[in-house]
Amino acid sequence: MKILQVNKLYYPHIGGIETVVQNIAEGLNDRTEMEVLVCQPKGKAISEVVNDVFVTRSGSMGTLFSMPISLSFISDFKQKAKQSDIVHVHMPFPLADLACIMSEYKGKVVVSWHSDVVKQKKLMFFYRPIMERFLRRADRIIVATKGHIDGSQYLKPYRNKCRIIPYGLDIEEYEAIDGFKPVLSDLLVSKQNKKVLFTGRLVYYKGVEVLINAFEKVIGCELFIVGTGKLESELKAKVNELGLNHKVHFMGNLSFDELKYTFADCDIFVLPSVANSEAFGIVQMEAMVYGKPVINTDLPTGVPHVSLDGKTGITVPPNDALALAGAIQKLADDDDLRQEYGQNAYLRTRENFSLQKMLDDIYVLYEELLGIKSKELKE
Image (cartoon, rainbow, N blue to C red):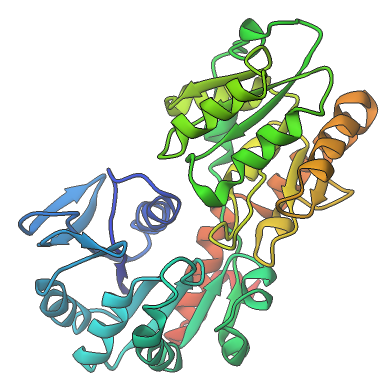
């Protein structure tokens, strides 16, 4: 079967959606004729082979409102789509919706719905009619959790088209770390303190300011913040203002291997997101694969469907520093509870969030759309 995967950008650009696209492209490349169509962040078009996957990057004049400006993408889409059995579009990407509608493509369309458009609400006035037409055109809509449907402003009318396929990790890759390195323990001011980890971009919806405010009330813990972003200076000033320099550590960006050691060395992982831009939180799985309890927030998205309240961690209301402090303190003070939630997290990741399971489920979906009887379905 010939598959055309469509997204804004592709590796080496790093992002949650780009990682999912790459995992599908490389993971199903041996079972399909896989191509990827994306845009350049800015610059002329190029076609290349990346890890055995054929990738076309349409020329772009730059990015506006988080979307590449590319006229050639529309013609590239039309040309490549007519050679494909299935076009798999990752949303939100308004240019792809428009290109598919304009191309009059007659084949099967799969949508991966990663999140609603949250920040550019005014633009939705213009984009929504295009998006609705494209969703009506789609044959299947893949979502990572039930929360993606229930919490979306737009997906409920298309519930019958939706298929829940959670994101997955290459678990063997995470397990293949070379021993244990105390990357966080070595930085502790007090060796008795518990190590609380956050990793992600330092942007508004991640809720790091709420986490720092919570740490004013937490005893016996130190916070490790991995990542950079436009709020970094502001957050460091906040730590200084609250006199928390002795228990809050900014670690900047780390390599993938270094990140794995930080997950393995922490005692508690926190994802304090405050806005629906956080649709899933893959970092939760990265902590859970190492048997770490997770504190997340009760957003109307997929976030609380990854780590489960009272099972693999604690879920608190978003933007509630007091509740967040209480959850951190509860886990820090109870070794048995941390171990119980951590073990449950370890098992949940392996049972529900493996990369191989995600790839197999997507492949079966492709076969269903094309009327192919798969081995998985026969069994």
